[in-house]
Amino acid sequence: MDASTETLTKTRVTALPGDGIGPEVMAATLQILEAAKAPIEWEAAEAGAVCFNKGSVTGVPRETLDSIARNGLALKSPLETPVGFGGKSANVTLRKHFELYANIRPVRELPGVTTPFTGRGIDMVIVRENVEDVYAGIEHMQTTTVAQCLKLMTAPGCERIIRAAFALALAEQRKTVTTATKANIMKLTEGMMKRVSERVGLEFPEFRQEHIIIDNCAHQLVVAPEQFDVIVTSNMNGDIISDLAAGLVGGLGIAPSSNLGDHAAMFEAVHGSAPQIAGKGLANPTALLSAAIMLLRHISAFGVAEQIEQALFITLAEGKNLTGDLSPKGHGVGTAAFTEQVISNLGRSSNLPSRQYSRLALQAWPQLTAHTEPTTRELVGIDVFLESDMGSDEIGQALETLAQDSPFRLNGVSNRGVQVFPATGGQTFLVDHFAARFLFKHPITLDSSSANGQPEISYLVQRIGTRFAWMHIEKLQRFDGKDAFERPQGEG
Ligand code: NAI
Ligand code: MG
Image (cartoon, rainbow, N blue to C red; front, side):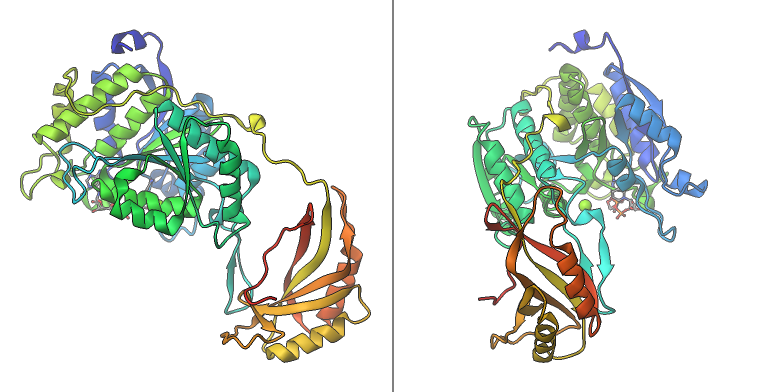
């Protein structure tokens, strides 16, 4: 599309200038977009340190949330997470408030930015699930020495991120979608993402589809990064490999990202507020500018996006007037001179690689097919987690006695996921946190709203409580005859 035909209607976008170098890279970015006649009307809003300093608890005031909610779009500079306020990061608050579940991180070799991988043709996008997994922050100390964090993954959460990956592959005419998981170890959580990707993938036969174990993915990213096209992965895995991948093409300082949800999209640089160089006019606006280019494509302003991207690429490739982080020592210029250089290159076209983009269409929540309910659901037992300094045999024998006259039998006791009773002969280091697995002598059928079995559980837990301090209980279920829980290491 011709850039000039896109400028008729303007889209309103919330601009968050942020902290540290934030206002400087934002000003530079807006200046370039203005010069390119990008069809955007900006609405400035505050977030981050400025707001914490004014006494805001979250760092994101109501007016800012309202502005983003109204516009559905935001361009965000880095926000500081002040140390000592004890509060949550304003970035995370924004992501969660708007349920921005898809974190899109393009990783592409930039012209003129030389790295050990230059010339390999790295051009991939990492699609990271952004709100689930261990990042829900549900953590509990179990005993004074044992910490626990819940890794929650959901069928709809997996489905929407997998669908986002395919939507992105379609929008960018990519060929391969690789799902990276740790399904070999975490069969239920990470395995869910793998299974969902295999099911949803059937709807997209036009793409090559692969599954890769996440640690091998990290290895392959360093050994042969050019093989990857779209990688989709869970929150924690994506956090790590997206930083790793950014490092392959020149580091976090030039990497953009978007955070997409059903109702809002937020575009940002990956880097932070760089307090060491803040206010000195030295910051490189490339990352935020690249995020703004993603924003332009998101609102279908493809021509302007392409024009700005070409101007940026030409500037980087020619190496004239680059900021200090991209120049040999002593040869860097300031933010303003770099910005002028990009503006002066607007309208020039080059033979640098460019890509055909179309609108990225996310499938909204109610359209997800989610999963199919099992026809049968049984309660087969419980795990009772307890604190004890006693030896394994002593614990096992005591629990067997306590379970007599109950509808349960003790199946075994484990410590940090390894069976220790009945003893297996393994050499397990013991902490004061054990899991006792009790199985119903006769499994109980559950209908969908069923609380069946709970009186029996209460009875057993009450008996256990006469001798042990228990921490928490997990129900053991079977869906369609298949165990919906894992077995401890060493269980026969
Ligand atoms: P940082 O990304 O701010 O800085 C790391 C290094 O990269 C520093 O040497 C810095 O000078 C350099 N750098 C970063 N961006 C640059 C740019 N545009 N031009 C030239 N050099 C650049 O990471 P750091 O120091 O860990 O974090 C500083 C603050 O930023 C913290 O308060 C942190 O919480 C916040 N932060 C915010 C993020 C966000 O808003 N998404 C992301 C990461 C950190
Ligand atoms: Mg990170």
